[in-house]
Length: 258
Image (cartoon, rainbow, N blue to C red; front, side, top):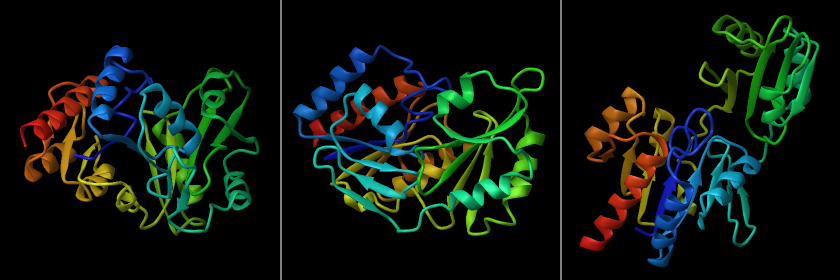
């Protein structure tokens, strides 16, 4: 393989955004792969700013695809390419969300999740350009969010953003707006092959379909498990970072035996 591509959340990190194995051990394996000519890339729903944080932490050397296939970025050359030119209309988004709260802030994710505030607020991830993550929060007693709150915000957004897929995630308490037709496989052709891809949800299947080998962690969704089984991919019994580590071993072992 010339490239190994990872989703981040649910694959390289757990739901608290942490590695589940020793990072030095993981980076040593990555460096071993790099010495064999393998590029380690990332393909994530996250914005470039947050992908780069993890890219550096894990010692990767390859390419980046972000915001669910909206852009391609090469850290080594600075080359950037967008899948399309139109960015999300932030002014329209703010005006629409005033149906839920007048207190709407663009900020980094840490501020949305960790800083104490008052009243109902909506946080929008400032570093996104093509997609958007919406965090509705109620601070009238203590910081809370629930499915009813997320559904209420989705109901406000859907009539005004008909060209977007609008999905909520109770694990992180957010709503993701993604342009219809955009997928994580959209710019996979920019990454050198043969390719191996590792993901945990059905959203990752499009990048796997553009790859020669595929794998998933033990914590993946039932739909992903079914896809891996049907496509003859690698299903780890381990979860999160430990599974990603095992996938690299599997790919490098396969390469060595060929």
